[in-house]
Length: 151
Image 1 (spheres, rainbow, N blue to C red):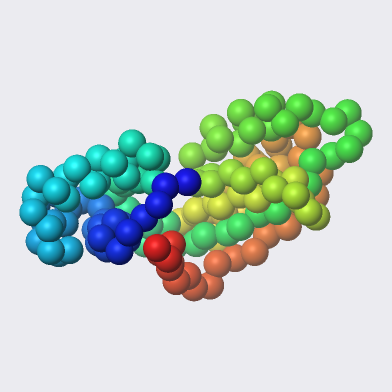
Image 2: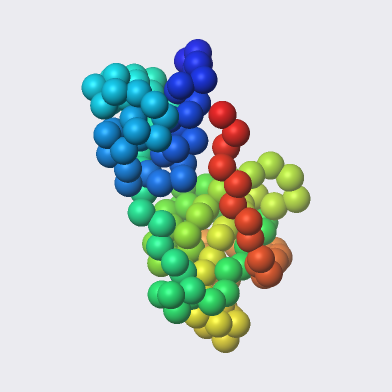
């Protein structure tokens, strides 16, 4: 774990708002010179505090109007390997996130679809045919508020 000072935290907050900013823009926002800010950003990257910058796509603008979280319990009979299930599930393009979890279910999946009929197709033809699938519980996303990690 790296020790962060107030300036490092300000840099992280600025980059969380807009990861596309260059070092000069971040420096201006946090009150540093561009070279000093660049060195701090590099230090944060080297320490793996910053692990990348990603483009965020608007799923609604792309036609994906439904998001569903699935809890998947693998069947106990003829237990399939976790690797076989994971390999098969990540090949489904509508599955955006695969989480191996403890609790009632073995996996939690985030699935996007164009509408409920499209989701039903993905569920029946893709998810339910995966190796080892037992129980599946679906929770449709109604609204979402993303909150940045507090630094």
